[in-house]
Amino acid sequence: MTEEFLYYIWQFRLWAHDSKTFSGQDLYIEKPGIRNTNAGPDFLNAQIRIGDVLWAGNIEIHVKTSDWFFHNHQWDPNYKNLILHVVYHHDLDELPHDCPLLVLQGKIKPELIQNYQYLQESKSFIFCENLFQEVDEFTINNFVESLFIERLEKKVNLLDQRLAKLNGDWEALLFERIAYVFGLKINAYAFELLAKSFSFQILNQLIRKNENLEAFLFGQAGFLNSAKDEYQLQLQKEYEFLQHKYQTESIEQHLFKFLRLRPPNFPTVRIAQLAAFYKFQNKLFAEIMRIPSEKEFLKIFQNIQASSYWDTHYNFGTESTFEVKTISDERLRLLLLNAVVPVKYLYQLKQGNENDESLLELVRSIKPEENSIIQKFQKIGAKVENAMDSQAYLELKKNYCDSKKCLNCRIGNKIIRHVR
Image 1 (spheres, one colour):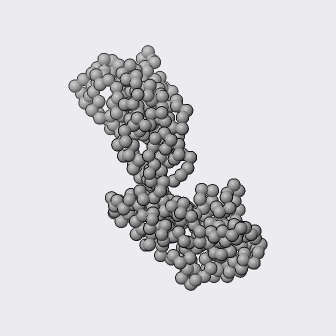
Image 2: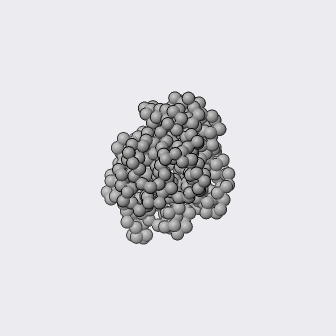
Image 3: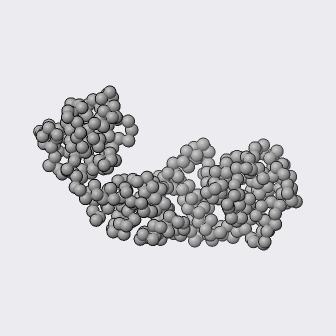
């Protein structure tokens, strides 16, 4: 038995309703109150009826009555005016306080406890792996959309804070987010630092004046402090001029990681592709905001390729077999999903268009991600048909399953209450 489970039982009133207090008085719950996640009683602003008297106030919940002393509530003034103390097991000879006591042991259906324990003790990929297919499609589909929005809002909250620091410059925000995604997981932080190492207005001027954006980005990333071949030397000279002109400071090259990366994912290749992506795009935000689907996005950007030097290189000074370094459709989908979609959602919120369905239509047009987590969900019967589905299941795994939050999960709720 855990307090979290008792909170769940209390919140949804999942015990015998012909309840009496420990002293034998009739008890009826009018309102269970609001869950308090801060210091103080567990539920606030509850309403209960004891006999003929209606009480309004706060509720404290413990597994055992003696937890009152274990948590030192006897010294805390926040617990002096409780209207009810709820416990699963009463293990004291006398009450530790003057408020009424409700004992839930014997009042909760055994199936609820068994189902909860089954989920919590499971060693499977997810706790409900063997029961997932028994949950109705309506419950899962509704939860999938909620999970996607939940995941998206976490990204948007951080972007909103950054937008304020950028004085509302949407182009700059989009550039930073695109750079972050270009870095993939291993180099995302380094690429983000690169994007923040200079004003976006400088990038605009570089494009407008047809100056060497690739030299500038490699220089800002710290890759031009020495030269291994003629091309790197050429970039170095151009960067020295640009750095002096725009008065910028580079970041450290060691921030970029090469270890255990496939050559096409080397940060050098990604920086060259980022330069190519922006070479003719100083007004990218307006163009991207109007894109309705993955198909249209790929049509515009799938022919972008790094400069010709990279056809025979993955790093400076070392030649390789010929391969044009275009941005793959898979990478473009990552950009669309992890850069464009969050920025577009924030823009809709700022414009008061949060109910605009075009964003959801865009996400549903994107192919789902392919990774081991998604494959395992598919194996147990989850339908993953588009990026909304895959993003939702990643959120489910990370923030519900891995944290054992079955009580906060609609799928877990369904299993605990109805399945088996």
